[in-house]
Image 1 (cartoon, helix red, strand yellow):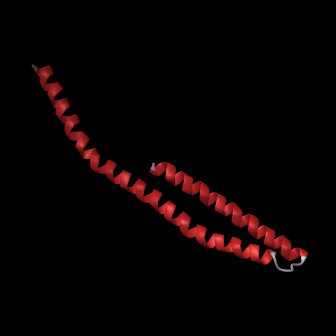
Image 2 (cartoon, helix red, strand yellow):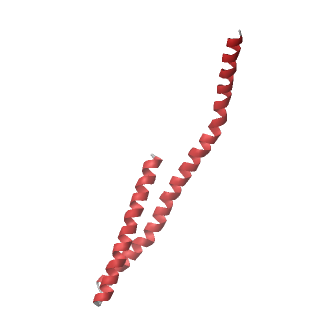
Image 3 (cartoon, one colour):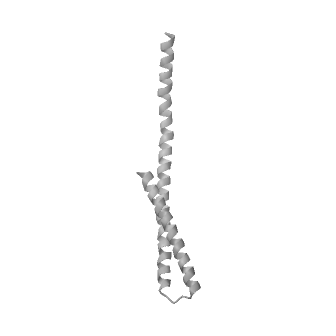
Amino acid sequence: MRWCGAATGRTRASSTHAPRNWPARDTADTASRAKDDFIAMMNHEIRTPMNGVLGLVEVFENTPLNPDQSQMLGMIQDSASALLQILDDLLDYSKIKAG
């Protein structure tokens, strides 16, 4: 009989332990979704002005530039393009995490 009582006690302990973890899991899931949504939103918020920079670079390329200006404009374009690639990667990651 003692053995049966011990088994029943363990069963009750594990069944009462599981529901206590549900709110923590739900909170973690909600926080993870909020983080992914934030990354996606910030990605778009940064992408818009970065595309504006690239557009202005393209306009300036069609104006007369000395070699130094042309080189600096190329560096701006390369940097902005690299940042856009990073943003694309972040957006892809957040989409994968979101499912």
